[in-house]
Length: 350
Ligand SMILES: [Zn+2]
Image (tube, rainbow, N blue to C red):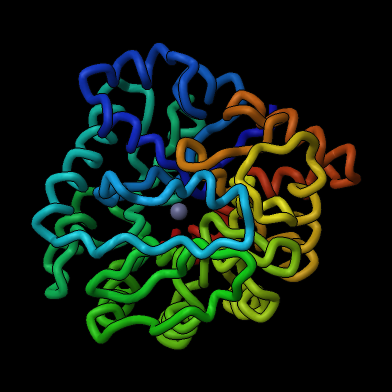
């Protein structure tokens, strides 16, 4: 089985919502969602980025976003900012769950590529602690150093809602990513401090101005952990060919997002059958970026995924579809894990 190292998942949200049952959810597996230890083993999922993400409080009169995303065109309103004092305990709880997973002996929180290789060799899930939106960090950035000491090695300055650091891209279709202001002064300081600490910066939820700000400031390869090709699916969350060129020239990388809403040419959220949209996006990303700069960024446990994938145990079927499409064994290995390890080496050092 080909090992898969993955750019983005929201598994920690499931433990946040049901902490009393975390042993059952992680170790035993209950068939819910996309991820658990037994299904990861079945699918060849050897590790990836585990996101710490602060859910937005939803007003009871909020519109039905699910319904809206099945009837394009749509432009979902962004939730309000989450205050620091609300975000900190949630972020700590999610990091605590990841550390509990490590204490079960089944997963290792990796701070280097050597750690990832060692975890893979030991048969433990190789987890990179990632923060999707920096709401739990104040503009003085002291907490960034605390989080780095706790193992944080990847950070997105914003999820889509606004923060002290910048403005994210809304969920809109059809729409380009040029939707508003980019990084604030604090956001630019955050980029510099992440460079200094060698924390990878994730561009996936930035709008075009924020993307340009990071590209102008950051000394590291530019990485979008879970985004697709705007030329195929014109969602505001997908990357234009110009952005893909900037990522390529920086020695960076894009992880393919399995969310149907970013894969289907229609922009619809409902699950579809077959692999055509997946392969179309991969062909385009490889064409724009080259074979060494594309990987996988599932969004498992945070999105609706293609019906034939189902969950993490379906990964071998997706890799088979790539082979049937004409991708050679070496390219599939690069997409599945080698490119991620290489870009992390370029970002973190050896
Ligand atoms: Zn995301």
